Length: 479
Image 1 (cartoon, rainbow, N blue to C red):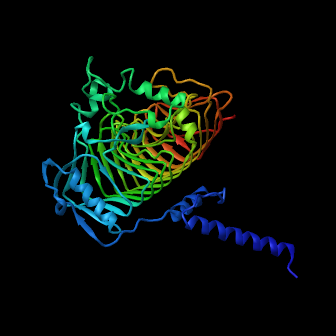
Image 2: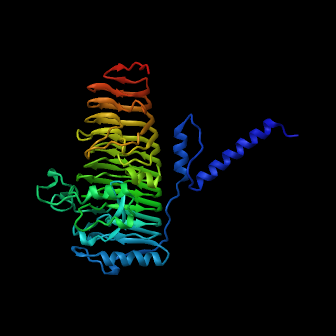
Image 3: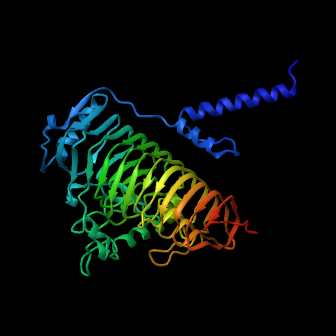
């Protein structure tokens, strides 16, 4: 006779096996021990499938490409990609040399591989980027194609130690930002003109169909660099990326992405290094980010558009990365209306007088969204300008940013973090009286030098465990 206790034990074992099986098939993580969140990270990693390609190469030179840095090779590269896909997949080789091209559209089962001294020079002529369904600052629209674009593709990659050069500077794409430091002067059109960014945001608020949100020529909304839109099982590995027009690596509504060993060096406006948006199961590892904006910025849509899509970004892992210049090392927001959860950051080095923050969450009552379960450990920080941890529910950069969607920020954990110079604040957290920032833990954190220990407003349950700031142990705060 089987006892009830034995049946219970058998049920637990069976349930655990089912969870492991689901994870191993690349499904979403739903059940794991609450006592050790890093176990959840390990299961996420094991659940992400890797790309696999046929052992066939298609050299773009065989399709008419010319490596003189002047001849436009868009058609030759496109033909090589489509031929590779039609034959079951493989590698499309960009050999050593400089290849000028317009937009590159990838296909399933294709690995675009750059040899070590290969460089793709992307045209600065907007006419070389056809109008496609994409996203701009968290709002979907029809706009210039990203420089490299894939939509609804599976098993696709960009690899190799070559260079992707967007050729953006203060005489072309960057000037569209409307920033004087990027070449803009009064009388020059930009994204800030009334018919451009503001119109797009208004269209989204009114629920205008995406097919009718047509931008492109005359609207000055810069294209992204690399965008995987509604894709699954993607690898981006070993590349160097420079001189981007806008956001650089942008997984959008995509799952199972591995970004490994990529170097981003681009100091233009809105030059975020990597922006996972509405995306899940992402690993960003062994990368270097030296950027004009956030190094990594996790997104989930802007305002009404984000609430319409309603896909949170989650299960995002950052490992062994180096952050140099940037507005923040790992940032969540501000386009965050669908929420973010299960973010893991470990074994990173951040150091620059031009790095503003280490970890940052930014939202407001127009964005809304729930941000929860962010875990950070084993971080070495040299110099950071403003603060180590900033949690802000009142982010405001484009005029009035208030509404009726009060955000939630909770369960933010830092452990084993060593900081030489933390700037102005160790922790700067501001919430609403009705929605305080909740459950912040700093454990085994050492900040050797900082102007102020913290700046707190409407914060509930902040814990300092074995944490030393300016050579003094931080006492618990009574909540």
